[in-house]
Amino acid sequence: MTAPTPAASLPTLELAWTAFVDIGDRRALGRTPLGERFIIDILGGHFEGPLLRGRVLPGGADRQLLRPDGVKLLDALYEMQTDDGAVLTVHNQVTIDEAAPGGRYARSVVKVTAPEGPHEWLNRRVFVGTLQGLMPAQPAVKISVYLVS
Image (cartoon, rainbow, N blue to C red; front, side):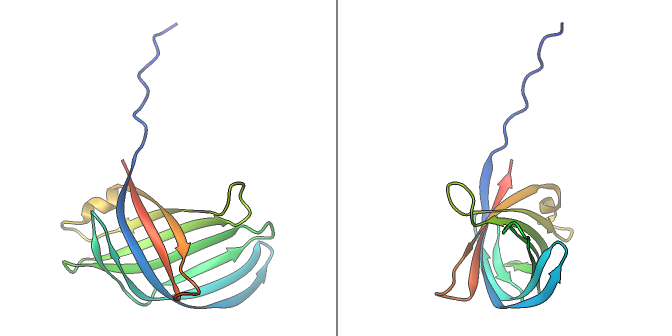
């Protein structure tokens, strides 16, 4: 029997940014065998945090699938422009379970595509996030994104 190897270090989370994303009305796209589909336009917004800050650009969209079991899958693709002018493409895949034990579950995997330069490190890191609706106060969502170290 060989000696056990040291355990890998456990991941930690560090807040990277919080985005406030303005959204349009939800539009139905029809029912499929997998569930009912919707789309929501991303109209703009802003983001700020210890690692990045800037504005959310209009033109993205959030495609949603409401499964028969009540779980909602979101697939959002949009761009953010940092204060120094770099444009990042963000792909945010969210799982929402309103009936989760202990309350609402809304967690995401966030992938960032950054251009060469000072933000290219984003291409080589893992990010996770949370999602909170801000309706009815305003047609927006709050997305907190964490760097997994």
